[in-house]
Image 1 (tube, rainbow, N blue to C red):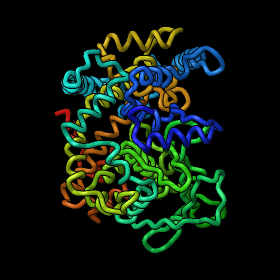
Image 2 (tube, rainbow, N blue to C red):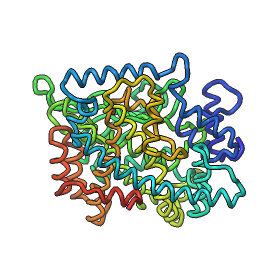
Image 3 (cartoon, rainbow, N blue to C red):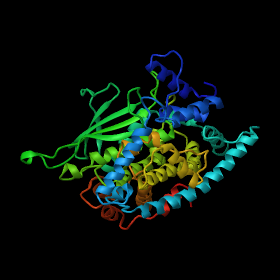
Image 4 (cartoon, helix red, strand yellow):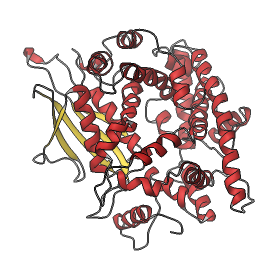
Length: 489
């Protein structure tokens, strides 16, 4: 527990309680392991936790994913050949906005070089902080978040432990609902009379500005031992107007899943800024399902091309950092006081710090994904393949990757094979799309929001994605807003 703030200690005790243990535990849930790596003063335990986290799926025994991953890759190569494609990547990209490997590599190469440059600049700041503390050891992957937090505090006066009390989960849920109301006229009414599949799941009836019901929304926010990791949106029923006998439109039932570390009974669950972005991100997917207005279920909601599907979710993240939203909803869990302007200004100043680290981690995973799915040769050791790809790119070891191949659920169980690049592709779209609100001078501009609802959130796959974006924006997307937003220009 050395160095851990109260909220991390509380989460570790709650995780222990859920497992019937007497001593605190650090699980591999992102909302617990990341704060542990950020604050723990025990470098030996940070290394132990880091190695356990990145080693998921490659430990001998029942949960070793290496052999089955190789089998899946072999079957995908065979599938592509049978369908007349040179590689599985060519097959997977044939029905996307990108269409070709060359276009994907052009984006990844551009961002990779800029990300590595920004990463090295950040490393210099971390080395300076380490030297001032009298520490001589080189920065290893399990050290990065710890020293980055020191830099964040000293250079930007932003301390995660100071921030978290302003981001209680109920307040942030109220914030996403409020943004949906101001943008699209939606209202969310709690339905305590509906019994969900778990006691933590809350149900809401969703209606439009005319008080007409449009769907049901389920929120499953907490980590628990048997729950899949990560965060995702599901549809238990899709919107469509193709009901039997001409009946009224079928309304969607949409589910958002998160894996936040649950606070002890009687205490508020506090979110990090990254958790808040995740909450808004998944809710953006949820809105994509709830606002769908198409004739056929096969074209409904998120059933769009893979490199378009992350646009509505990533776009909605922008409202999580709007000053007006923060001032209204980010209130101290104990005092109820609104977040101070000075703290918001420090958050904004610090927002681009760490983007080099995050860009390298994400892009490394996307590069490995593309490389493994465009390989024409059998792969019998995914760990060695991953190592060779990163070595060819001279990937900085201290950064690591978002997801390694042995536990890369996106690729092997999530439908993102040769498609992890889509988050970056969609970020180009979402940053340019949010520029429309910036140009309008109001993050909740009514006319812009109406176009956004019609063409981006409502049209599903009934309109070609490029045409839908042009109908909303008036032109094709531009790369510069994304690079500027990440601080990579």
